Image (cartoon, rainbow, N blue to C red; front, side):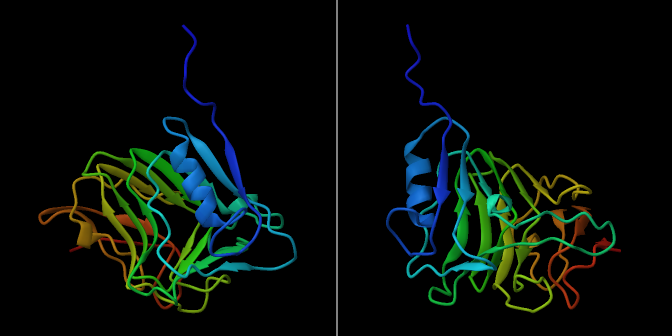
Length: 220
């Protein structure tokens, strides 16, 4: 019998509109409908410089495995500086019109978010799947402007309720396991993952007074 599974697809965002063809909202909806395969949301918005997406209502939950890749926007590039950052991020998702909403809300068993600027939401990225998911979040500026130097904070940067979440890039954080959701909110302050008496340290390069300096800290 032939498999009825759909092949993996790439859904490309071509404008900053709130909805309709070529919008991020429509790309998420299309990916959600492509069930059971690892799709990609890519970006190819015409014109130079940063492209800012300002949703007027909450974006749809991400309900199927996907790679949301801001690095696909022409001119973008990941960081290659081991001390600070020389990343060029050209896709900004900002929530000033919906401050009570999450920016990207993952309710899936896995996926990757990379190369995005996410600011001014209640929660920048909410990764959850009833404790049974594995997610990767890397190369993003969470709670800053696209330069990574101006504070445009979310209330919570990253909120996690999943079994395993990897935060970071070439030198990533330890994989975060066994934690409380409120322990991982990397927006303006380093917090910790783990049970009350068993918290994992995090390498993080987002948030704080100087949001591009990588710091390693742990509870005493």
